[in-house]
Image 1: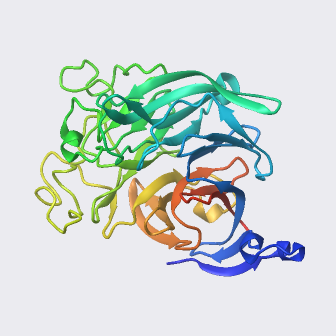
Image 2: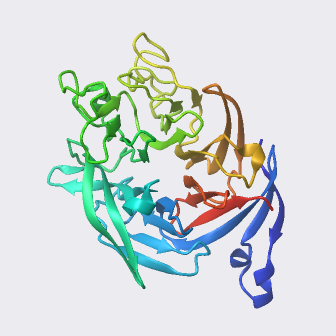
Length: 378
C-alpha cells in the first residue's frame, strides 16, 4: 500500500519563503501508523552514506568526494579534511559511511569508496579516526581494511556497504563491476560479500581462510551489486539487498561459503529481454529470501530498532532508487512475510536509511539537491 499525505506544515510561509522551501514537514498515513517526514539537512549533492555520532551530530558523504559534519538540525556544517582520493564517475565515488559502535573509545568511522588506480577503479573499505576541534574536522590514520584486487574501467557496480558485526569483524559488499562472470570467480573480490577483521586480516573461520580454494577475505559469492546491508539486531545475522538486471532484485542472508547464483540463476532478465543463465534455480545455488520483479532498484537497508514508531520495531526497511520509495518488510523467523511500499515519488531516489539516536528513522535522497529526512511520530 502507498502511504497517503495527510497534512503539510507550512509555517515558513509567514516569512515569504517559496512553497517548496516552506514545506518542511509532511504527515503520511501508512499501514501501521501515521508518521511525519521532516527535511533536516538540505543542500547536499548526491549524499550516499551517513551516520550519527554519539552526540547526535551527523557525518555524511557526498558521492563527489566530500564528507560533512552536520548538526542534527542542519544549521551548522563543516567539511571534513583528510578524506581519501576517490574516482567519482558513474556509480563510483565516496560511498558508505558507518560510525563504529565503539566510537566513544575508538573515535573510529568506516567508509567505502571507489579507489582510483592505473588500470581503473575498485571498491575499497577503510577506517579512520574522526577528530573535531573547534570549527575544524578531519580524518586521521586512514587505514585500508579491504580492497578489490582487480581495478577496472567503467563506472558500474561498486556495491559498497560496510557493516561492523557484533563479533568484531567487518562485512564489506562489492559489485561485479559490470562483468558478471567475476561474481563466480572465488579468486576475485568482485560480486562478493567480504569479511575481515578490523585490522584487515582474514578471520580464521572464513570459508577460504587458508587461501586454497578462494581469496581468504571472501564470505559469500555470486552477487551482482549489493547496495544495501544490515545486521538483524535480534539475531546478529547479516542481511543484504542487491540489484538485479531487468527484475530480480534480491534480499539474501549470506552464509559462509555459499553461492547466491549471479549470473547462473536469476529472477530477472537481461535489459534486452534475453534470459539470464539457466533459470531461477539450480543445485548448488542459494535462493533469495525475497525478490522484486519488476525491479525497484534497491539501495540502503536497515532494521528499525527505534521507539518513535513502535509498530515498526524489528521491520526491515529498504530504499529504492528507480521507484523512489521505501519498502517496509515484515520479517518473521528469517522470512519476509509482508511488504508495504511507502512514500513513493514523494521525496526522490532513496539512498541510505539509518536509525537515529532519538528513535527516529532517517533517510537520504540521491539527488543533485539531495537531503536528509527524519521519519517520526507526528
